[in-house]
Image 1 (spheres, helix red, strand yellow):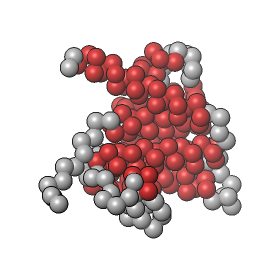
Image 2: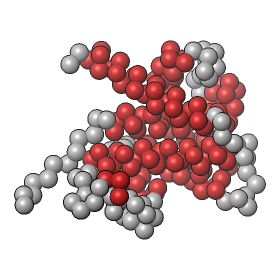
Image 3: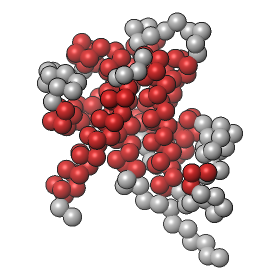
Image 4: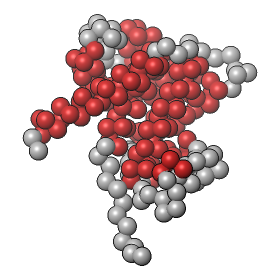
Length: 201
């Protein structure tokens, strides 16, 4: 296969996934973005894991007993993150990133906490998330600008967290990061080889 076509196809897939996630998140409240964004990531991880694993012998994939409840082995967000890392689907940086996203979701899910994206602890988590994904962000930013023109901001300097936050604000910075990570996971899901069973009936 022509590598340029392959790269173009991946870029197009990523841009489509990004649009789907970002356009939904930007309509959410800050609390909604944290919770819905984590749900996007968890769903992408589940799809990656299902692409890797042999299908259930007894149940349809949608009822897969490994995932169907919080008491299942892969029913929690944390378990999905850790197993995706331990099976080689995600890197150590992505593993750390996804746990930050999970922690942010948990922070915002506690209704008793008076927090928003300007809260120092939230800003620190977003800053850490950006730093872990700085190279990915800067690599993919041009793809986003080429595909969406002024969907986000005009093509200004977007190097470093201070410039990104200055242009986007903390909420939108987080939404862009979530959308980039979720989109990247789904692109990788399409390239995940399934485990081959060597057992015969």
